[in-house]
Length: 263
Image (cartoon, rainbow, N blue to C red; front, side, top):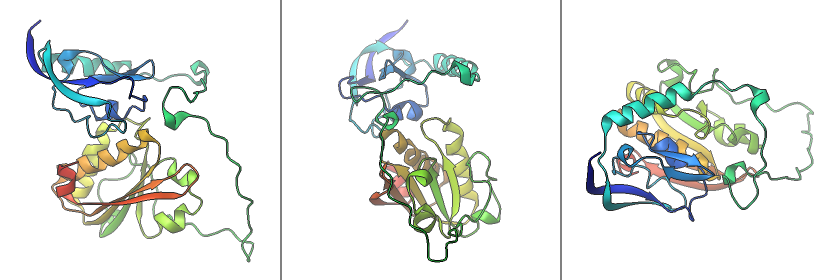
């Protein structure tokens, strides 16, 4: 084991809320959620570049210089290979729901009970028309090329957005090509490459990213910005943050590839 003085990630467990954004951002798989906290599993897996810094909503991650085991690419390859092998299907009967209290766990998983507003029937008594313009909608299933991307305004939405937002179709979806994904539960690595191919090889006019207010959802925005930078295209990006009660809490214009490079 070679120990050197170098830059390496440090995680403040008191600030960490266990959202897991840093786990999906770390290409080396050096960070894992253990006991509801992000932890660096081994010094030799961390390259010290700090791609995980900007994604942490709590500011719990920093890079410091200290004595640490040297970064080892072969160890990273073995580690990632082991992670893939361990991602085996889990039977539903093996899953025991565990309620999260306000004192720990991911805020996005905390149970909240709402009192829905009364349903008001339309004057005609008919259902509102769907604004969905294509099928399928899941990013994994969408073709990387075709007419749906030609001169398209693309909406990339976290899975939960359409359930939380009552007027999702009218406010966000109308006139757009839709792709949905979950940054917390999906393997987002392939999403970056696929979106980069879509952006780079089609005439996409604009990108809108709709995410929930919970911290773990912000990983989807990072996926899109990384893909845009990889594509080499300069496409305007707007992010929309939706509250858990379906409100539009924030809109952010993020520019194009120049903004992605600084993300």
